[in-house]
Image (cartoon, rainbow, N blue to C red; front, side):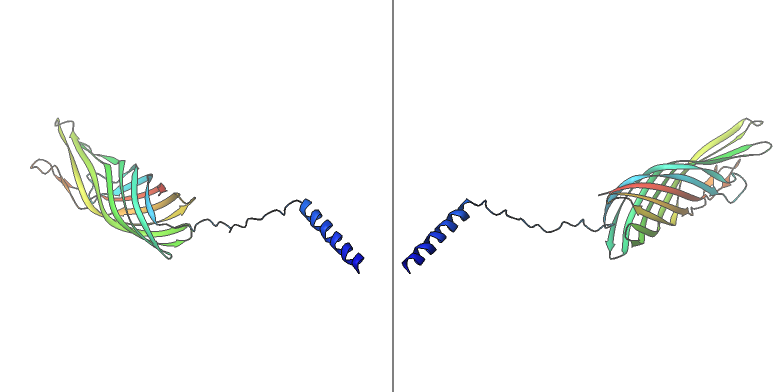
Length: 218
């Protein structure tokens, strides 16, 4: 019996010594997976836009205008589920014009600035946003006429106000960079140029804009 106890004691001592010589077990640190935040259209953005423009006048004095526009954009969106509401404004340089020539005179009109301040409402399908827009629009138009045989002419610039309505689609390449395409129709008020006893003409300029834009969203 004594021998059995002594043998068990020696075996336990050897096992403890062997266990002490083993390397410590490696520790495992568990960390929860990191998920990228879901994309949202909510935010303030700034960007550039540019494209083509064309305009109709109601009489034959200036004909129909065509040309280009380029400028800057600023706005903000707020997303509620799949619905997006926001405001947007832009100011563009423009060269949308036409020269109408007659046997004794020639008339020229050129739209050289455009400004819009609009509300936007849209439906988002993840990174694609379909939107409609509407609000205020104004353009700076310069009209001139010359009569070489009579030796007289004139030039006049007018700021013409009106509205803006349109629609478009926007796509987010990243969480910050978006591109868009849009069409805007600007019905503007009828304006009298050269209101004098010698020469006077009225020209409502109903301007259409087809533009692309690149925005950075914060």
